[in-house]
Amino acid sequence: MDTLTPLLTSLQAFYSRGQKKGRLFTCIILAFILPVLNGKGSNVYRKLLHLLHVVVSETRFYRFMAGRCFRWQQLHKAIYNQIPEPLEDGRILAVIDDTINPKSGRKIFGCEHRFDHAAKKNQCRYPWGQNYVQLALLKRVHGRWAALPLFAKFYHSLKVATEKHFKNKIVLTQDMIKELASYHSHNILAIVDTWFGNFSLYEPMKKELGNRFHMLSMLRKNSMLYDFPEITNQKARGRPKKYGKKLGSVRDLAVELRDKVYTISTFIYGKAREVQVYGKTYMSKSMQCPIRVVFAYYKNHHVALFTTDLTLTDAQIVDYYSARWKIESGFKELKHDIGSKDTQARNEYAVINHLNMCMLSITIIWIAMLKLSENAAADFIRSRKTPFTFSQARKYLLERLNFDVFYKSSDRQPKNDQKSWLLWIMRMVV
Image (tube, rainbow, N blue to C red; front, side):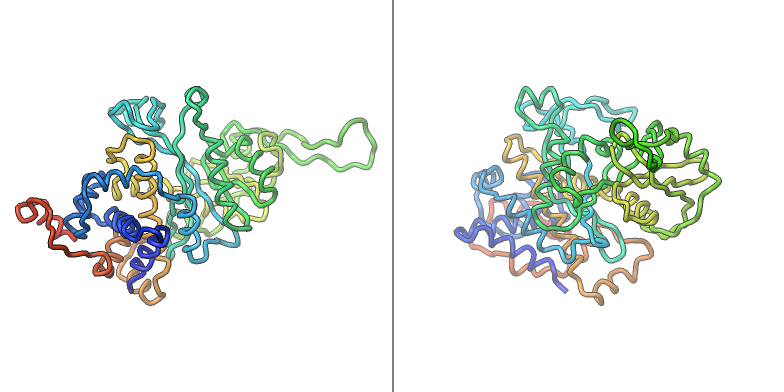
């Protein structure tokens, strides 16, 4: 069953006044999806020329890639509307994180020296690279979690952002959540790590969206938790108390509550597991509201997860936060499988367009998998003992793709077409 071709051809509707531009854009997205070479612009041009036989000059191709004609806001909304049933348990799950693309050139849009907390011992701690924050939709795809990238925005440090009129990471995250909220009227649960899980993101979004916005994150070990204030009928001066007795830090409470744990069954990293947890509602001064805290224990380790959505169960909290890792694996798919880190673009619009095209390629693959019929999905999953990967899903869809819709033969052949050993290898792979 071919579900990829209708999605790709639907992108041409954004260029109704220029059919050639619409077809070129569709073929470029398909060139990114093809598992041949990396995602450099020169390699994408080779795939267009030799595999899809799209006759386009090199100058026109690079001008198109660096053009200002892309209506990304409309494209993002159209792709979101293509997602069948984007809700999970009645809410939108938005996972947010940031990453770095190391670069070597100087005059590249979005580059800056930033501290890399994930750098290895043999890597630079302050690499020169592009920094961007990404918002992805967390969705179950035939029994496994997947992160569908929707938005990405480049950012700088607060000092450079002020000098160069850039926005910092928190402000860009707020803009992306607002754009996602404009697509629907459902509740949004932002699943973030400890850097984003604070009041600086929660307060403005709560004012903007009200009870539609909630957050799920992990507490730091030194975070203080409080009990609810006692309700008394005695009149006293001043406003009523908002916080009760200080109960201690997360580290101390985790040790104290170890004897009160109970076992729940939930999915963690794609497998059904039994986890020892203890959940309770506390007051938090850092979030200035009641939060549901779940202490999860494993051997000698423990983590404290919290959410402002008090309707979530303990199993959902653990399941959703463990699924947050899919955005990390999504960065690997984006940088290495699609090849966004290998871009040679330097111009502002060329850099933004290249990243958005790479993200669009991944999202289209997952939407095409979601649109598979139950029988086709069952046949695809039956032969695999473990959850399928992005590369396996891409290979499965390309095997059923109708290339006749995109393939265009022409009397005008590229130079050195018959002498290229690279062309022979590319055709063999495809």
